[in-house]
Length: 126
Image (cartoon, rainbow, N blue to C red; front, side, top):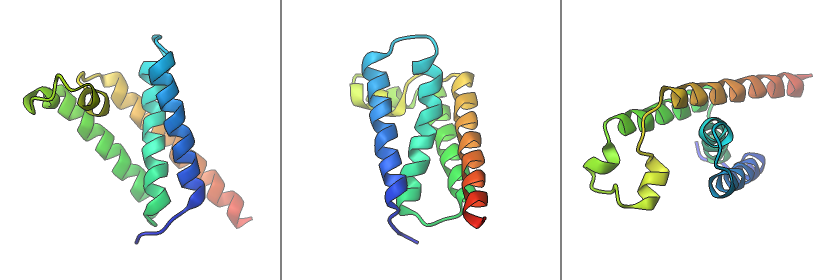
């Protein structure tokens, strides 16, 4: 069911800005490759939750599977197969290099989401 949750939407916007700032100004061996991937699944989760009134676990697992799919497509050089390897936007959005560390970062990001959501829901019940 579609709905609008302002708090998730605001958080998604904030995380999007953080991702853009990381992409523009950070070129290191930790924040950009690892923290950026961890944050991106949280960003997608918040964006989806802003509009889709579904159980937290369902959304989290859906986002994680989507992230895994993108990573698998990177393994198979999907951007190049589509002929979009010269498109900077396509390379940024879909990526072009498979890394097992990305899978780990996505998994940790969604685990963090589930932990925070569990605490949030427990606090709301009290």
